[in-house]
Amino acid sequence: MKRIPMDIRKTIKKVPPRIWILVAIVLVGLFLRTYRFHDWLDFGSDQVNDAERVGAVVEQTAPWPSYGPDMGNSGTGGRQNRFRLGPIYYDFEIVSAKLFGNNPDSMAYPDLLFSVLSIPLLYLFLRKAFNENVSLALTGLSTISFSSLSFSHSAWNVNPIPFFSLLFLLSLYEFVLGAEKTPFRWVVALGVALGVGIQLHAILLVLFPATLFFTSLLFLRKRRASWKKLVAVIFIMILLNLGQLFGEMNNDFKNTRIFLASATESSTASDERLSIRIGNELSCTFQADTYILSSVGPTDCDFSLMNAVKQRFDTETSGPIKNRRFLFETILCVLFSVAGYGLLFSRFGKREHNPSRRRFFGLVALYSMLSFFVMLPVLDAPLRYFIHLSFLPFLFLGLIIEYPTSHSSPRRLVCISAVFIFLIWSNISSLTTEIREGFVRSRIILGQVEAMTEYMIAHRHFNDGIRLMNSHDSMDFLKPLQYVAEKRGVPLLKIGTKDDPATAKPEFYLDTGIFDGSTTTVRGESFDSYKTFGQTTIFHLIQQNSL
Image (cartoon, rainbow, N blue to C red; front, side, top):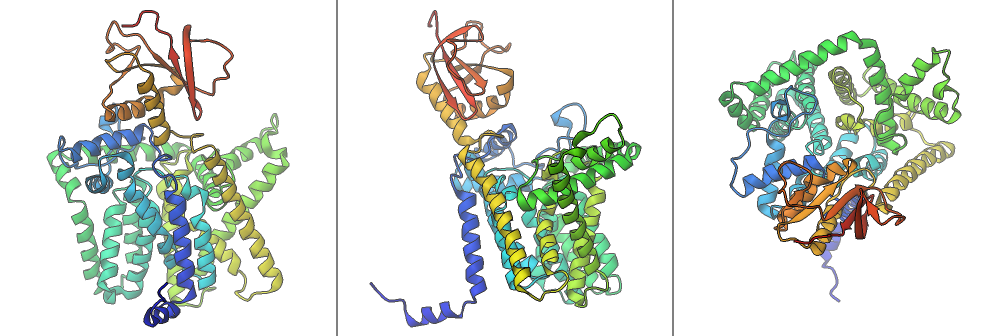
């Protein structure tokens, strides 16, 4: 066995230990995000719609898109009249599909790439606030965060948001420090983060420009020479949005008018219940901070804190107020967020003596404050709406660890270690549960859909395709099954619609739930075999008169 050359060994020894630790953290994150990537890939109806659009462009049966995914709570009169984001997310998927093949997992590779790249970027971001040890510990914890890993096996336009949010804030911070002397690489990075970010979600479409605007007023108004480089940032942003701009000009700015109308309607509706919406957003913010950090709590905001406050003044109901566990979890949840925001804003004040760090905390405080107001009119139940703030709970934890002093003591180290051990355990526990169930508990995955399709193809008796009848609860499986079946060259006929052939009879019945084998009929039809896939069962119906 050949020995490693001396010059290589010397080079390896010169690499600081923190780099090796960071590399190890990134490798762990890469493994967790790629493990059974194809089989566990999220493949619901939204992903099917995107795959069909992207596939049509790859196969040159449709032009390169001028618009991206649509926003569900916008517009009226059906999906075709919703507000559509910029096309950058589809651009990522199209390029990936052209390089690696026209299939769902190839389209998800950009999401995977940005998810992995966000790990070292978070470390660089945290280093602006903390020392190496704290930054590495927080980065390592974020790598195994169940909140981020739960969306790692999916192609979804919000998935790149953590990366571009960090890139936006980090490059904007460097811009604030450098002003007119800002290196060109940070000017380009800021322009790219802004240009891509505003095409990923409507929240970022407002939040990123608003943050840039107020940051310029607060930090750059007296440094006029820096505005020349700010123009370069805007130019890069416009350049990345040319496709959408041309599309708007050719479409009489219909998309812009839908966005403005939706924003006006949301603002008008929120004015009527402003106090309730503020309370609900605070409740969701506290839940999101805790869930992102620990995976403890519901995956969607249940407004538990706000509901508890309401029930406190309702003499006829006790609600969860008398539930000790609820009270304990709620108190910890509120204390963590209040302490985090309090320390963040205090570091922007006189408590922070380092001017650079003061500006860093001021920028993050401004971003989080603007985020609160931007989300106020559009807040809904899913905690995924807080994905652009996914770094914030880890920043809060670092601030709490450092408070009131950075000096260490044995007792302090024991407490910090205990907190990290609990957070690691809670995230791994949630992840283990999902892995054990194959990620099919709460979503449709590609491996499951492919296995269901192969089962029906292998057992079908008719040449015209797969004749499938389904229960109402299993409707969400139809589009994924049709997509995969078409890829296999076998049409899937949904029995029971006006488009079905008059002579067609169902050969398979799809239902949710695990069948216990207690009967030999389903929906009045006899079956001779069945197979369960996760939480779904397919029955092969007996054909009285086979064609």
